[in-house]
Length: 293
Image 1: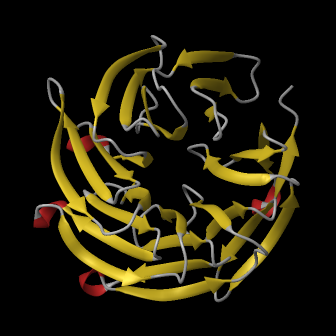
Image 2 (image 1 turned 120 degrees about the vertical axis):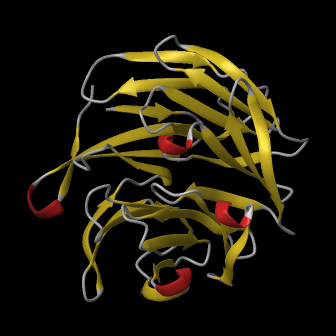
């Protein structure tokens, strides 16, 4: 399992670590300032990054170098998402000035669509196997953009009272989880006509929630983390039950599953230093911290 480690405050090099191996590599990011997001494509062959310099950089992981640079505009970029490969190489990016951009690679990367929001857009994610993009804004709205409507708004609603820091689809696209500075996680269900209905409100965190991720193979397992330093694993059955809490005593910025869901990596920060923790699944979706040294 390859995961990405970087310091959200000042790091401009990308370090890729193979969990449970002693292997690591560094790629010069090509960014001139802070990196805000890094994402693998579906196959793990390509990597894209974005940052405060307003550029998206694309890297060939096996060759360990940059293969493309996309200039969007003079505004920091906060989030990236790759589409499913059946649509080709498609990237979405969100920015501080509220622009959501869609790029497609043919011979070169070209911007094929934009949507302008009034406030900053902090996170984006494509629905699995669909060109349907969920976006979380600084004023607590979720915006759904649909390729079939020329990337116009399909749905927009007030999901939280404060900044949305993260969002994630489950594996079949029937649920969307959002997390916010209001300390809440909300899970939205989509049924007829893609109308969102609030299914769960989870009030387990004591501070800002920075990231939320569904288990890649199980629709009812949801993991979250944030400023309270605790990784929380929830089981979404009749109620949103918290099944496990692990205290890392650090701000949790990003959470990642491997493809099978039996490993979780947690990227966080404590006293200005980036920290990486890895957890392995035990019985009944309980996880334990493993030593990768």
